[in-house]
Image 1 (cartoon, one colour):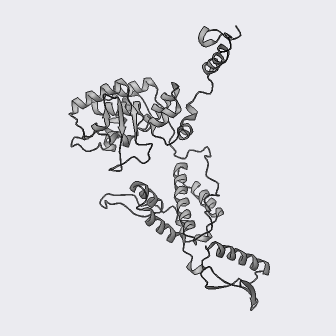
Image 2 (image 1 turned 60 degrees about the vertical axis):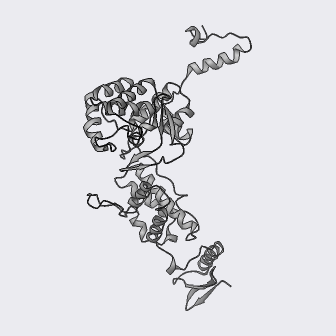
Image 3 (image 1 turned 90 degrees about the vertical axis):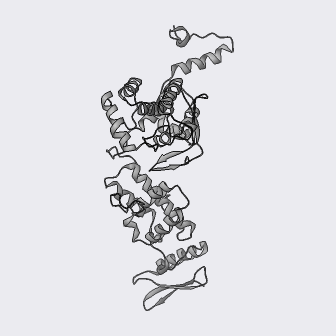
Length: 392
């Protein structure tokens, strides 16, 4: 039976753990009996949950982190695992000859702590420390995703009772410049200027495809002619090319069919004829048939075309944002835009692009008025039909 006894002026906790092994702990000098009983109750609670471990056997965060990385290596996409490893400061590069910046272990301050000593307060202190560094809010949120998974792994393996990351207050934007990229949208005039500024047919077609389909850069670079249905005017997204490798779409929604406008169909057909492209050939490729080299594409073509068109501060990914914003601005259904973009739910689309939606819509109010009162015999005059105010 668990009990608290006093020996040589210090309280001693004496009990049996969930495995039937005796556990005794001599508390520090000056500990009161109430404090000793409180600690015993905490130990008994852990024993009931079968999460109690002797101090000497409790692993450190660094040990759990390593176990979790080994566990995740075969359970997620290779590039995702590499991101996790980079957060933990673990080398993973398969090309040692390529010069890389040394990886930073973002969890170095936690490595020396026992896993059961990491509390919600510890996590919030970690967040505060990171916000004091030169780190973007987006990167910090990714670090918390990794930390959350490590602590979740510890809970599942009964190393701790609960995940302290879940209760921690998440970091918020402070209004300071934190390096997070701002979404920028091209106007129709800028789009035409960009297309006209690119002399190379392949890259001109690439930009047009990005703007008129909203496909991600990796999806376009992984596109094959067998994925392009010129007669049906659709592009099938079946793979993506990232970090020098081909991958299947990450989610079910990412594997999709995107409708094409007649102009894009015409330009793709022209490029196919000029390049001699066949079924399994890449639509956009280098001279030897391999995918376009991103740095070359950006520095030798995209950036010079932007400068020539007088456009500044635009990333290639902003072409996707441009597609989404123009579709929403012209009143397309959010569900349709979501499926075309490959988002898993319309909520994601709204969260990203809600600020682009019009806050006022008098035409919608007028249509509602007509729907209601025309069915009851009333004939209300609207700005939309008559070009004058309702009140005359």
